[in-house]
Length: 223
Ligand code: MG
Ligand code: ZN
Image 1 (cartoon, rainbow, N blue to C red):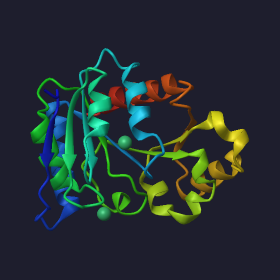
Image 2 (image 1 turned 90 degrees about the vertical axis):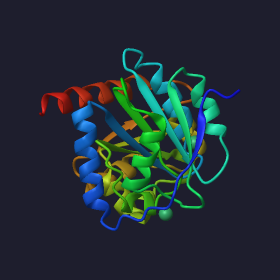
Image 3 (image 1 turned 120 degrees about the horizontal axis):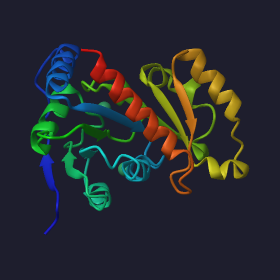
Image 4 (image 1 turned 30 degrees about the vertical axis):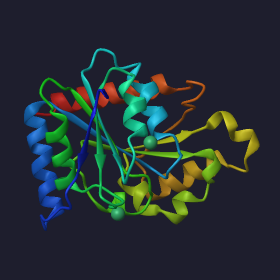
């Protein structure tokens, strides 16, 4: 038997997503649950980054919501960390909105959780358009995708609090100008924090975990 369940998410009927997102954020705050929304293209390393990061957050009770159009491979992988996991099937939808996120949180069960990580559906377009009610937004850009992504998907870069540049160990093999990405991303979003990481080689994952701990601390202090 699997140690996670699969939840079929119903398409949202609630009209005002921003309103729903704000109400969900408030509700999560009152419950003491910090929600991280992780976004990227398919194959940038969301799941492997989440798995590695959980290793550095052992003093937190963590839940993970894996959103995909189909399959349960990511939930299977993440369940091995010991975190509480649910697989969300979006019925063809290529993003989650606040109402869908709420359904996922209800399915997961947030009692006693400090942190919920939402792995959003992999794409750089519409996940950026729908506030999920998250406390912080994370974007992962991997080196093989290229350094032009901030120019092509500015909205995604504008709504994220932190940008992880993954597969940095492979930078020699690609024509990827780290400085240019940094400049392009900061141009769109001057407050964005950028950390180069390698989930595979476990480089700087501790720094990302420290950022999460700091953000949770600030969020708790800010009543
Ligand atoms: Mg994944
Ligand atoms: Zn979509």
